[in-house]
Length: 180
Image 1 (spheres, helix red, strand yellow):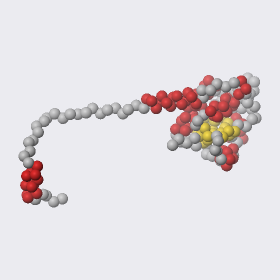
Image 2 (tube, one colour; image 1 turned 30 degrees about the horizontal axis):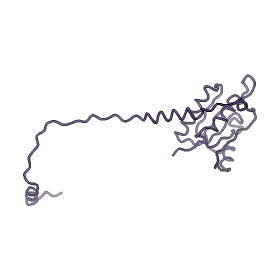
Image 3 (tube, one colour; image 1 turned 180 degrees about the vertical axis):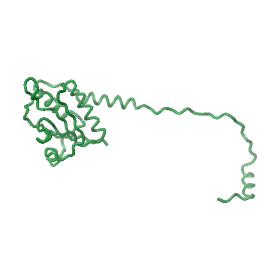
Image 4 (tube, rainbow, N blue to C red; image 1 turned 120 degrees about the vertical axis):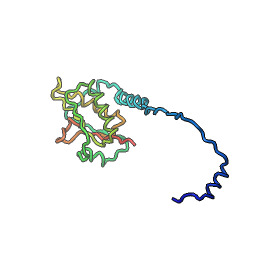
């Protein structure tokens, strides 16, 4: 960079006019503001978890046959996607084993699992609910509840009972809705 010529300096001073130096030894420091906390988003997320499974179920929805296969898809899901899900062609990115859980424990655990899976961008997860062989009446308790809860969840696009090697009618593959 070249230095200014004397004529340029004189022209500048003539244009600006007389200047007066400001004497100030105080510097105003502004305290750093803390980052805002997304309290409303936290409340919204908690509300979503509560709303996701808020519906109560009647007695006709509490039993499911051990051998019944579960299958569900939202409107617009292609048949080829369901075929691929049924055949276990999607990569399982997360798994939740609910053996031994009570309904009261299973409901919030499932809600949190689905929420986290969706938040982390998981596409397909497996939920193991069991076949109910160790239940008092040899009937699955969680299977019918999970069937209803998954149908009501906004995070779920589709689900289908797993292949025999992945648990058969004691587990389901679940396609998760992608958040954008």
